[in-house]
Length: 168
Ligand code: PNS
Image (cartoon, rainbow, N blue to C red; front, side, top):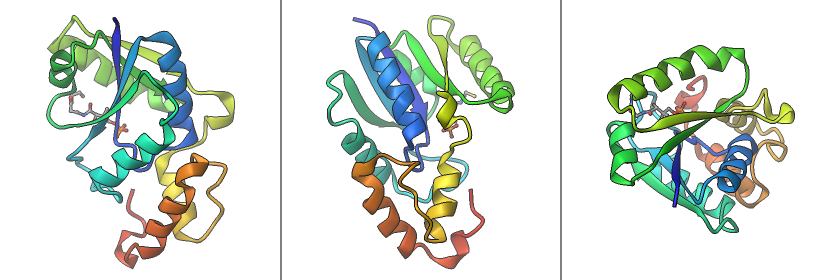
């Protein structure tokens, strides 16, 4: 059985992330969506909310598991016996950072391969930051997030204090 890890902050999950998860689930026997618990940039959504959104959005995908992780990604991957790290690439602007992370991870553990999936064309512009900005100002986030979690995300956006405006 080949296990792959799809890591990220998922703050919150978007339809772009979900597209990558679906495609990875066709390529690998088991996909662990690994949600970073303690991020440098303070997340808007708690780890419980971020994992809960992902669980709802992937409820129909039998070989997809949602897990929180902390520390080095390669250590988590080794613990879970994963052979690959899956990353989505939206545009050239993602490339430099992703390339740096992939090479660092290979230096740390060369038994784990990073596999890049290109974003679908319709999701190339999309990010969690866009969802938060549009939600915060009362815009329609339905093109950007899985339908089953739209209201949960909007509820939280309405409760956010003004200081989060401008946060990433
Ligand atoms: O969705 P993001 O914020 O781009 O995800 C970044 C993530 C979680 C993949 C990255 O920050 C990560 O792997 N963090 C764990 C710490 C680590 O292993 N760092 C070394 C690789 S640079």
